[in-house]
Image 1 (cartoon, helix red, strand yellow):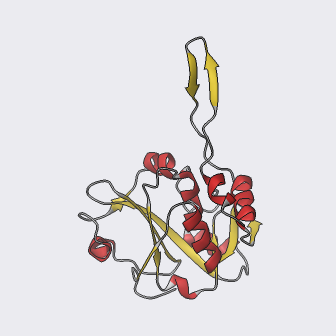
Image 2 (tube, helix red, strand yellow):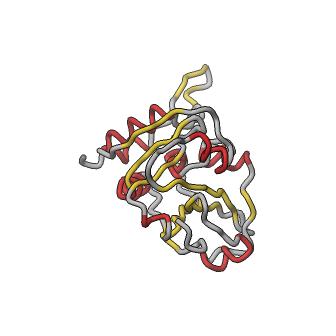
Amino acid sequence: MSGTGAQLCQRAPGFATTAAGPYETPQMPYSPAELFAYLDNLGIAHATVTHPPVFTVEEGRDLRGTIPGGHTKNLFLRDKKGVPFLVVAGEAAAIELRALHRVLGATGRFSFGSAELMHELLGVTPGSVTPFAVINDTARRVTVVLDKALMTHAVLNFHPLVNTGTTTISRDGLLQFLAATGHPPRIEAVSGGAP
């Protein structure tokens, strides 16, 4: 495809007219259907299985059945200066949060980003965090970090912006998607090595 996908990610805000003139209306977060259309436009193969809502890695293990590929946990973090990071690792990966800021060169220790900040930047709620959510971060504030061990999987699985499904995508497809949204990821060894 010839770059048209990147334009999809930067939807123009809607406009309305009042007696005082035009004003911008807030852009709603992407829906799963819009995400799938974006992936299709980029030529990225994907498949989604629906299931009851899951909020933890453990619940996901019980519900996903035999979906092949790497399954993940996604940590929405911010450093001491409030800079947001999305750290994506294998579901069994051990991540030492107290030292992670040194690995990533962040300012001060990480804390979890609030639900409000998560929704503001990524357009998702706790339990639905996914690298697909950076499609909503049009200001490109979030730094995406992919664990090096996770990237050994040829196929990866993430929530499609909601926690009632699991979307399978190739590793290369994920990298293409992140680049198209303006979020080229950092690939770093952030875990103890468990993919």
